[in-house]
Length: 615
Image (cartoon, rainbow, N blue to C red):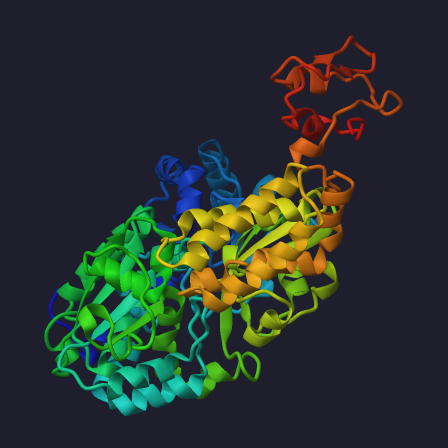
């Protein structure tokens, strides 16, 4: 392909309008993200192509493997356009029926349509499903719509027009001015204004500067950055080009953890396509500006999500944070001025430049502009990727979009901000998604992981789980994080095992305060958040573990003794058949009995019993 000019971009956009507006025939959009690949979408695609060929429809119907659709719980997913019919949980064996019934005879296959968990109604159209209807896709505007391996389809959706504007019509000062006007804050967790960070780097003297993209997403339950890279890699590259122009950098790195093979592969394809078109490399779009991008694969160390540790890793050194100041905008990668933004932040940049900072700032709250992407997971019906305006209530996120808690169980808490975030209880569900509002209730925005917990979650054990993760991922450089998190974990383990004493609560609070004040980097400074937030809102559970040697949620195995209530037991034998230790005695239609000497307290019988007969 020849090197593109701005006129060339316009020509590609015009030539590909049919594809992105679903004209000229039916388009079948099959989700091709990691989640859907794991549940068999590639086999579904192969079976679909075979069924189309059998019915002579190959020439009139277009099959597109998109990136992540977002509704991960329902994969494999296919959307029939231009009708907008949404099919879920597909199997290869379903494709012949879908083709024959829907594509040949015009009758959608009802059993494969979405069923709302709240109303129990079948919904055919994607835009009428509550999970999608309440969202506002901006960073995710191309998810499930385009082929992520086609630069032409990205250009047809205004791709690289923001970069063209920045390179040919704007000065670096004007670019930064629009970024400041947008109010975009870093979506990686810290929430620092992106435009201000860029301005610091622009004003720092230096012939060599760098632009870095942080794709080292390591929070449990977080998959926002991975999904964006899989669905829309060119958006991130375009954002980096604009950032480079703003600070006069000529080389950038995308730091992606090696556990993201599909995201890395699609990034490699996108970079190669951009270079072939002259959108990366020398004299981009004839502007005289040059910029190139390379991928650096990290080994999966959580601490390398911290900006200075990430830079040390790229330099070939051990990924460990360093004290700040100096900040990376002054001395970053190889001691040169550097800006680092995460994937979601960069995915917003081109739209801000193309549409203006005021356009972006028209959504959100006074202090938190725009939209935010969340990975919704845990005890919630609609697990998936969600983008909502800043200021949206947590209740809307969990119930209107997430579909509420499954199995008619009661909502208990939501962990916001990853392992360094905090647990927010039910009485605070009307808290808006806003950097300051979330911080007031003891959590952090973080990168956007949202883990919903139901009534069967033990909050002491949950704090132990997150502290175990943090302690394991601590780089060990500073004593407060290395030793402090270890001691917090030991105390939590002791409480969960029934060996806690009243003084442990005071120790947890005092030690947490010291770690927050003295740890070197953000990992250590926020490490005590799960402990402090659960103590703040669920202190009664700590007291029950310590004083009564009882776990109210029945999750801490060391505090449990399993018995069968003969009045509730129906004699179904499910517990007997499931017990791995043969610790249950049972005869047909007779109440079961647990042999305590054989019981290994694995919880299997408790989870299998549908009649609450095991307590």
